[in-house]
Length: 161
Image (cartoon, rainbow, N blue to C red; front, side):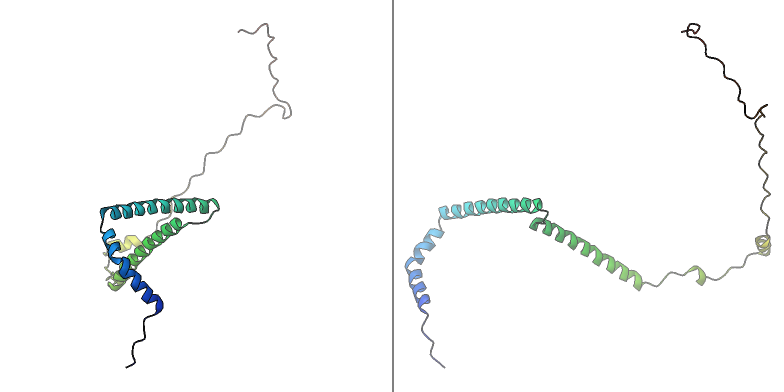
């Protein structure tokens, strides 16, 4: 077996620094103040991220482009449609495995009694239609070009108000 080569220079430097400050860093991480600082940092980061994504979302919509929020909504909707399609496919396969119901043509034919057969073969003629009543023509005028004269208008002074 070949002998292990010495550690790289960067690794030796890292190990030396870690031994020097590692103990103090571990003591600091275990304090209540560090936990509070990390909690505050996480809340601030979440708020800033929300503001940035909201601004990007509105800006993209301003230019008629879809944002990450839109893409995620469409993805969720597509996943629901795919789930429904899988369910319907399973139902269809279950129906295809069942034997088909007996059709009308597969049933045995029952003979009708002789009287019913005789009535079925008799054809009756449709009822006779009666003609509509004759139209009467309007009374004839004495002269085809002349219309009856209109009454003259009453003078304004004779009208009753």
